[in-house]
Length: 125
Image 1 (cartoon, rainbow, N blue to C red):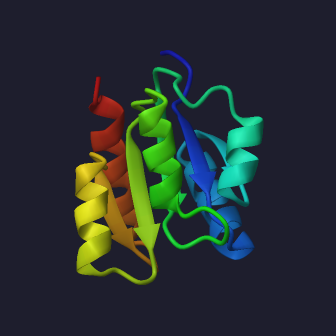
Image 2 (cartoon, rainbow, N blue to C red; image 1 turned 135 degrees about the vertical axis):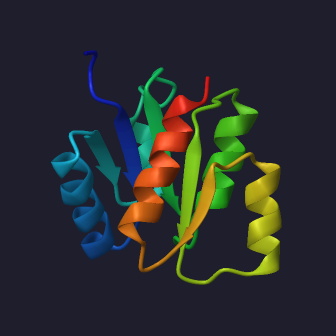
């Protein structure tokens, strides 16, 4: 078997980010976690790794998960993405779809829904 997939978790909520990191590592994923979009952009050269997925919180200060994903897509990064939110609305759903996200998950995150979305995302070419 190859290396475990890398999941990039970007969420400004320490509790959510730490919980996701532990949960994903228990499932043998490699996890790189960041407290903001700026921290991710400054510290992540692996985002286009072949077995990778972005797990982005939508509502973060300074740069939202949607803005981060829009920027990455503009730079040609096509890494599959899953967005998470505590406040879903129609505009968010439309924006997420336009950026080709694999899933838009509501907080609190259902573990089965998360793992299903990750499986689907990691199958993408």
